[in-house]
Image 1 (cartoon, rainbow, N blue to C red):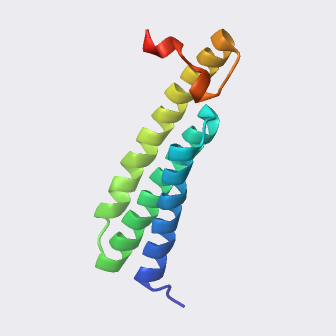
Image 2: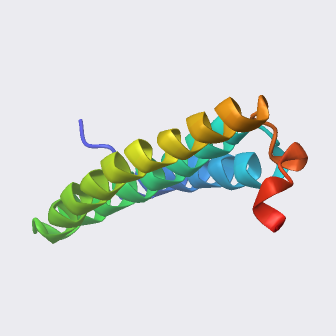
Length: 101
């Protein structure tokens, strides 16, 4: 059984929308961080779907590079969030005023 391309793209679009809503409306740095990861995974899903549809591996190569970028983002992002929490004792983005100075 082969899943049609438009079903996979619809799921990818839904995941991306959930990620955008999480970034725009959540205040916790961890939730925003996870929402960005959901958006990256939605793009990965679309790349793999189009790659399979066209019969080439170009999309899968892009997914490999995006996963590498996401791993680096996780390392740097979590380090920043932990440093902010240690200094300010909060992970709420609306309460972090130190970055404005």
